[in-house]
Length: 309
Image 1 (cartoon, helix red, strand yellow):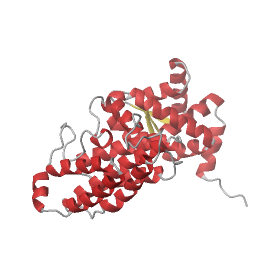
Image 2: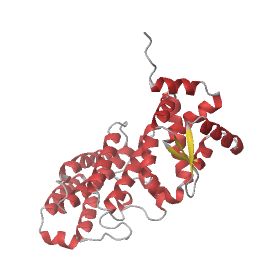
Image 3: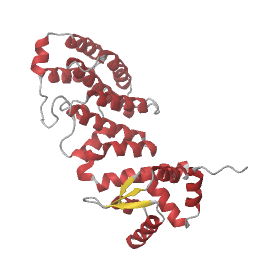
Image 4: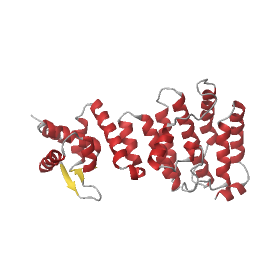
């Protein structure tokens, strides 16, 4: 007795029967997601506009995708999520990674003026595209956005994900600096959340690893005792996406507490935490002292917190 084929098998067979160029186009747009703007596809597909439009119409007639008018960009969507899944999985892993990387760079170019609206998509594509450092950059920026709207649990999860990614990278001084920044931001996030009564906090434990990295970098003769180098991949990403307004957790000018639009920290607690960052960058003795200082700060009188509010 012959069993009926699965829906996936039927879809895979339909996709395989497409002309080569149509099949490749369908696979490429499957990497872009369930819904995708035409302007993005034009940037990643090496076809003339007229030919691309014709092939998209043919995929519409075959009921793989449909047009979805949207402002300011015309968008397309897969008719069924399963169609996108099957088309996506039909690609070789290495080719999928290449397309994810292409899409991420195209999004940065296409939406440069509104890049903050696309951090989550950029994390996804850079992660799938094998560029974990860029994924960490955008996770950091996502966390700053979340802290801006007091979504501390969300920010904590994003920064924790960034640390997990960094933990899988080869050891080098530049990534150590990035990890120090992420740990500082996570400690601040959890401390604010705890003071506001949203969550428990353990900033000392979070900063312990940062302290170790500070000591390690300072012992590196190529670094010259400085935790900050002139090249910082997260800082560069922030400058590229936000112009002159760069977050203090990267540059050291200010920290994401309260509103990020102000150039000054907006509370006594913020200034105190910035002072901790400065201490963490100095000598081995200063690093240990900053750890003790933060512990004392977090258990100090409630008057500091009232000012921070």
